[in-house]
Length: 208
Image (cartoon, rainbow, N blue to C red; front, side, top):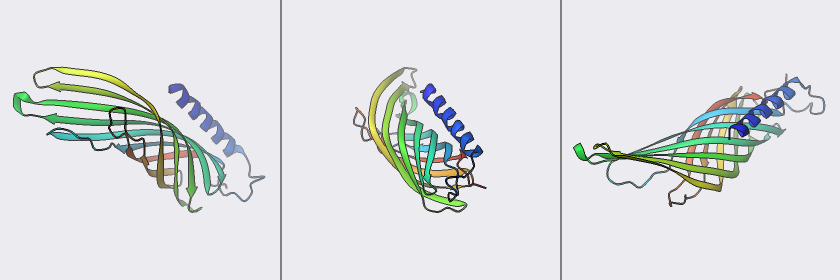
């Protein structure tokens, strides 16, 4: 995973440097440089889970690296590398009988993407999505007020998934919302999650 991220970052930075140093000779009508590299973080919303009586707490986060190549000012092909951590918590009982559990689901995905831009001005809304492989694992922790605890890790394997997304770019900032569709895991629980991402991109700016 670390090697893939490093390769993607180096590739993106190399493409950015090549794009910024080139002159618009054969594509004089293009308003934007061909290559760009996105770096975003986000808030993820895990699916609702069925729990016994008690508080159900859920939260998540995402980290995305995504190089792009513009086929034209309105179309960009990319390859998204995303890591997502989805956390769940549950407590039940009262007093000395209180118990609780927590679960963290780690998801890594590698997906080709396509974005369609709806405007070529300073504010550029877009729609798009992607599909590819998602790898999932789960860490579970349970304990009680008496001091007993139990921890375990389970690999849930890989599966095919996809996501639609929409957002906008302004300057070199990028904001998007997406919904990742993975279906159910081996335990029958939904692995789908929504994510709201905020970040910026290198390269890919307007030609001067």
